[in-house]
Image (cartoon, rainbow, N blue to C red):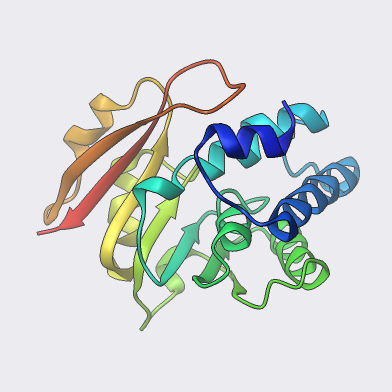
Length: 200
């Protein structure tokens, strides 16, 4: 699926410049993947559906001024969100030095002035809080909440696949599920969900 068509299917209105940056980001993933093994997905079309459109699908469910992407990896969903929402300040948290180097290079090459990279563990980021703390493939939901709740002044958002309900019984004290949004990602088979949690 072409990126522009997928964006329109999600009901998002992104300017041509943002679409171009997303295309360039996909090309950078492809290029760096040959050396750094950033992601198991290597074909451009699957990068678009499984990574870019999957990351974009959460945007209608979220509101805020800033966010942290915990365990950002190749920048998913953080880089994608930062491109689509340039008015949001983004902090990408990644402990792997090679992946953190990739994130820094991407933000430079794409001119993402709203992005900064924290190279380290989420529990080591102190004295900072965010409207949105999001994770895509970092840990099971309870562990993500436990390690990240100190960063949260708004909501914790966990991107999940089809089966996730059992994880919700392991939330730490003081964290409750506010809502679960089903995500319909164009070109992607299988159910996806966004679990929104608040601090009590």
